[in-house]
Image (cartoon, rainbow, N blue to C red):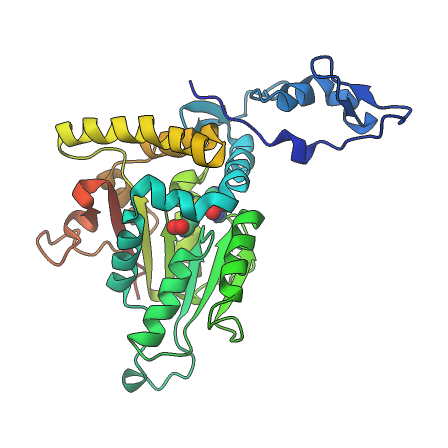
Length: 337
Ligand SMILES: C[S@@+](CC[C@H](N)C(=O)[O-])C[C@H]1O[C@@H](n2cnc3c(N)ncnc32)[C@H](O)[C@@H]1O
């Protein structure tokens, strides 16, 4: 079973040594403020990088997976947030190292396949498209949407909302956009939100909803799909780029698993001094549904699945398209008009 290292220090309030009601950790002799005293045992566990356990899980407490661990549903989003807070600063470099740069090709292809933007000759709409990039992180997909709509479709109006649960990931995205040509325009905005609940996004307001390498981290994936359906306009497109749990070729699958479980946590340890976050990232891929199961979930949310009923048409036979021998896959759904 994997252990995860919560960044406990961010959550603990340190008291000065002279604080009259401070307490001292028995193991490391650090001093902590009195306000956390009632939860001392739990906080000490976190401080020493152990998995905090909820004091008395009630019978209603549902569980889910966090990588290979089973955790209370109420804890998962916080644990995921901790992972991405931890990896945010190194995220882009680590992505290149772990995927040998291939994630860039997948992202390029994903965005190209969506052809974001509206060529001026085909519309009288002055507004372009409204795109929502969920779990947008450091803005890799959003930047491609804007570049494509501008350079390929000559559309200077299409805009993207980059939404993410994690403020540190968004902050990296903001830094990146600060030096982009889109900074002085109103074509990009940032929204800190859980994809499962997007109250500030109006129903039927979005033309294109994208989520890349994000949905496998969500606690309630079906709820997020229902939110995607709600916010999209009729005729709007849902598109997801995500790793798959298994390659179809058993030999390649075995080699790939060796690489991902052996090398990725090790690279995380060596480059980012954070083995456990990267261990979680590979474990979360294993727990993601198969392509067929996920296509079923998209259909259950109400979407029409392109190619689903007519195998052989286009690249989405069965409702998805495998990339690089099925290491990742693109899923699409269309909200019925
Ligand atoms: C692997 S990163 C992908 C970032 C970006 N889409 C990309 O392709 O480079 C996953 C992102 O999902 C975000 N995330 C995880 N759970 C989320 C949730 N429930 N709602 C919104 N974002 C979430 C994380 O904070 C993180 O930024």
